[in-house]
Image 1: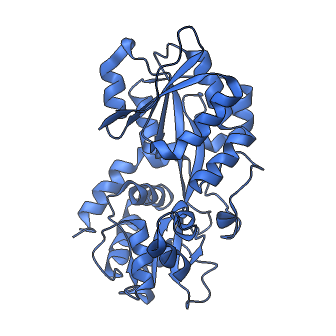
Image 2: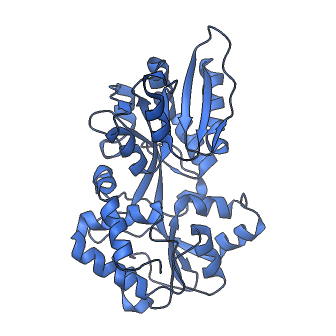
Image 3: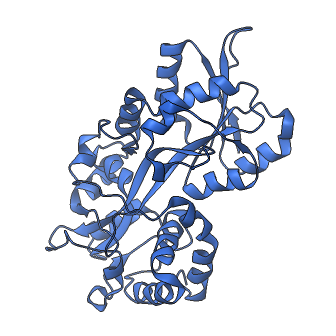
Amino acid sequence: MLLSFCLVGAAGAAEVNLYTTREPGLIRPLLDAYTAKSGVTVNTVFVEKGLAERVAAEGARSSADLLMTVDIGNLIDLVDRDLAQPVRSPALEAAVPAPLRDAGGRWFALSMRARVLYADKGLADLKAATYESLADPQWKGKVCLRSGQHPYNTALIAAFLVRHGAEKTESWLRGLKANLARKAAGGDRDVARDIAADLCEVGLGNSYYVGLMRSGRGGPDQKKWGEAIKVVLPTFEGGGTHVNVSGAVVAKAAPNRDEAVKLLEYLVSDEAQALYARTDYEYPVKAGAAIDPLLADLGTLTIDTTPLAEIARNRKAASLLVDKVGFDN
């Protein structure tokens, strides 16, 4: 599905062309704020699927300046397909911590979401919860998850694989599957729904869904689900909480390269990072940027140090392990 939702700017006016897989409503407030601040028109094309394929097919004729997507795997895919160009920017390098950007300047994270534990409010002693512990027999018949093949979970499994190797990851997946209360399916908000309905006691979901549910933006039913669960920031043993990112690259054939870099720099400014947090309930990548109170209430996020690029490189291996253990069957 391709949907253009911004008119081309007036002739001669400064403009920048953004191709994005992010939902229009999630980024429009940031883009409107940038236009109001800079006078630059942001022409935006929403590409729901096949962003890399489209840009590759357009080749040197592409009008894309900036490519924005969710999930580290998609960012690395753009780099691997030679669709991104390196950027050297003191502003970007100061705002985005080294683990959240490419050492060669080819991709930059703009916001983060943590893979957190949704749990029944009656459960105690979960503050030290680990991802590894979800495979313990104590949780047999008590875990709800979405598909293991969903990118949110394959990224986590890939991070587990980088930390522990294939043998331990396979064993963990088998233990986790044995603990499922139902078939791995649905979405993250369905995990909260099923915990609220006493179908299971714990599960994993992205942190921004907590904000979407508890704020009421998803409707009254989802607000009830969000309020019915407690949320814990789990960690890997000896590590931190797994995060994934939304991010962007400057397109290799960008006709407005300088404007693309300026927009990218704006997106990691204090103003834009606060807008990300308030609009999307995501964690800012810039240290000190404001965090929405609904996320701040979850506690202090300690990000796991497993390199995002290594996680992306291990996604296929993680997917194969999911199939090998029949996780979604």
